Image (tube, rainbow, N blue to C red; front, side, top):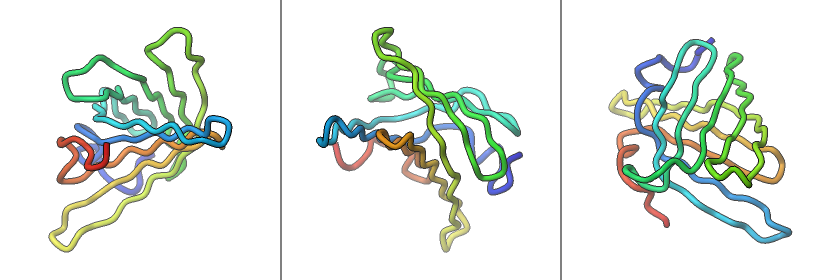
Length: 126
């Protein structure tokens, strides 16, 4: 069940980045994500490099308190799906706005999604 934030905060545009340990060298990518399905126990997000771009991956997750189990499905059929474990992190700013980060890993890959007032804009570091 969602305990740290409400459905409205969770829905909508997010930013994301992914870093993969490729034999001791980081491969990094990032973009925008749309939460396409959200309920009290599950959510799914479509990850894109840019707002009008083709889907890069889909993230399918189950929420248990503040823990998340997820599956990342690439749009490239040659890339196998992989599982990640994650946590929900939230904070309230001085003006009352809530910011949320979802941090996932499988030990090799780090995947983060961020939601806040700048979520509809491209990431700052590309």
